Length: 214
Length: 214
Image 1 (tube, one colour):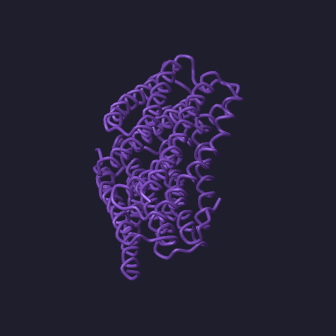
Image 2 (spheres, chains in turn red, yellow; image 1 turned 30 degrees about the vertical axis):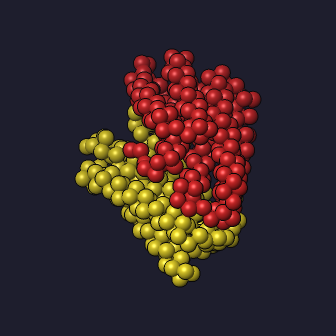
Image 3 (cartoon, each protein chain N blue to C red; image 1 turned 90 degrees about the vertical axis):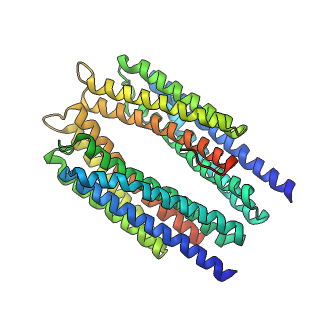
């Protein structure tokens, strides 16, 4: 029974690692597509989002089946419960990568990011990628220190987000409203992606210690 | 045991109804504060968000304790599991109401919404309020028809959102970028609030029937 439970928990966790790796790749590809105005790559990212949603459904099903069959308590129950919450966060990260991709599709072949703001988007994309990689790492090898690192990375992401907002609003000559609006929405997609990566880390720490990080 | 379980489930559900009513009021007040540039009301909404977060924590704790104590299976387990997911959606609705309130605070005493776009925000606020009210109703009295109504309401909300984006981008004379950006973010907060209300309805139908609505 105990071994069976551990195997089920491992299966859930493997699905989460697969899911999170998929959304890391999705956001990296979405960033590449955005900066290269690459229509095919953007369409591929948007299309693959359904796979992430299907993985989320599989995590939820497996969690429910495992709780029902094994009636786990205390830490075991919490681990399963948290896994389902992490799946929701990661599924949302996938949505946000798809949003970035669809923004590229909508304005193709016009580049969405003006030349002078590309460097900032490169940094934002890199920060998002690094945070998704750490979320994968925390899931594969739960570790409170890496989860705490995600918090610090998120402060950097918030700083980049603020820097971008200022650059958009203070730009000379001013951006037209349509471009400003697109860029701010893009910035928000990356910022929310990062928030969900932090949530995944938070919840993993909660799973380990039963206390939430604030 | 069975009666005890039913009592626990009712307690969870009562908390969800309380939470969802709180976020309905929060968004209604946030809208009033936005349109009246009412600093005190906006600050009150932002301050009350912590109560919603605390309610979400109580729902999660009660769900875990109930699963551990009662080891429910099948529909009972699903009902508890879904309640925790709904709590996450509703907590996020509270965040979004607080975002609207903080937008009002940031630009006070300057009104955030230009006079000619106010009527559209009134309609968006009313749509959000109606959807939150229906989410409360579905939770208090689970009913697939009301959950389905939420889907249709969301199409109306998406239509209003689109109408607002067009109004922002096509406005003559053009809006300055800062105002355009604020308004688009505000519009997104309402749209996401509505999406989470729909999710709450979706999940409630799933709780009743075991099938998801797409």
